[in-house]
Image 1 (cartoon, rainbow, N blue to C red):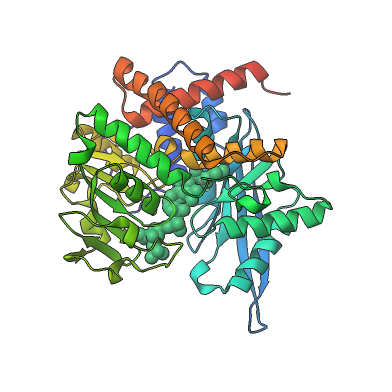
Image 2 (cartoon, rainbow, N blue to C red):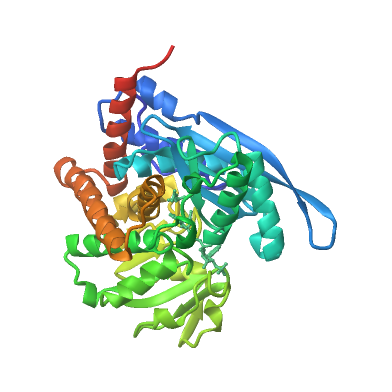
Length: 426
Ligand SMILES: NC(=O)C1=CN([C@@H]2O[C@H](COP(=O)(O)OP(=O)(O)OC[C@H]3O[C@@H](n4cnc5c(N)ncnc54)[C@H](OP(=O)(O)O)[C@@H]3O)[C@@H](O)[C@H]2O)C=CC1
Ligand SMILES: O=C(O)CCC(=O)C(=O)O
């Protein structure tokens, strides 16, 4: 078994999502009795499909973008995970993110494995028509690797319900029949689930609420800073405010607004409603994203991009609790520093798992051609999140693990047992 590095290493260059995911896996594996062969297999994806996606721009010129779909592991069910449109998308990033999806689905006990993909493109530089053409061509290029029983994409950064609608339509046209279950996160009118869009923010809020209670804080007396005001951050911030917390700071890519008396988060447009609008709102103070992370608040929710809490700023984090809304916001080295400083970090694979959980509900609805009410979705989500929280919390309490190690141990035990039961062929 590999020993985890004990000392944080300097981070001249930040680790890729893949390196971080592998280091987290190796560390977690030291806490359970797991076949080293299983751990070795889990360090690698089953496959990564790389495709060229040509796009005819609105001016008639042609540009070729690179797209990926990483499929990490499917021992527990079809690959599952989002499609990201962002300039920084790479093969390595998709593999790391697909590994996190494998653990996320397992920690939630969903019958899925992990996948992730995307296109290296700035979606803000595309018209709606261009985004549609790009998405349809991407669906065409991925036609052989996706499908309701193979690999089921969903929204992630830079994609949304409309993107999924185009993807589903293109795939259905290729197959000659309507197949809603090829993607989740679609609009409800074509088989999407009510509540999917807000689900990762909702689960982040639910887990934050439980963590606040666990550490003997009172939600109505809690100050919160949220980085990123998109699908995850805005919905988490708004719910936590509805539940009585004081959201003192939120941000978008350009910076943050701060009000020590609390912001009215429902009055601030989300990324979906109006990108880059946060700094235009009335607030007593503005600050950088870096300063937001270092605010002296009870709870910090990084909900934008990866690698924002690093060895360089981990010592300056003043929050009592960190709940990860984004995927991979904390580097491996920063995790170690925060552990030494007794700052609990509730990991992404638990906190933001509401998205994939409601995606699972959507997949069930599509297979059964039934639609659940929003109340049913939210009730079932609450139940699933509390079950997963209890599983992870029990490991924290009984074995003294960090929250991330505990979540990994829950996930890895389920995956390892499934692999042992199915065996390695040939
Ligand atoms: N959508 C989903 O279903 C799920 C998403 N996640 C993860 O949550 C994170 C956010 O995703 P999502 O909410 O969907 O994304 P969105 O695209 O909806 O929103 C992203 C938000 O982050 C802001 N942002 C972008 N770059 C930066 C930056 N460098 N610094 C600070 N803020 C920035 C954007 O600002 P602006 O408006 O100015 O562009 C926007 O407010 C990602 O890590 C994603 O993988 C996790 C689970 C599910
Ligand atoms: O809903 C899904 O299938 C995946 C969402 C996702 O990409 C994530 O949780 O990071």
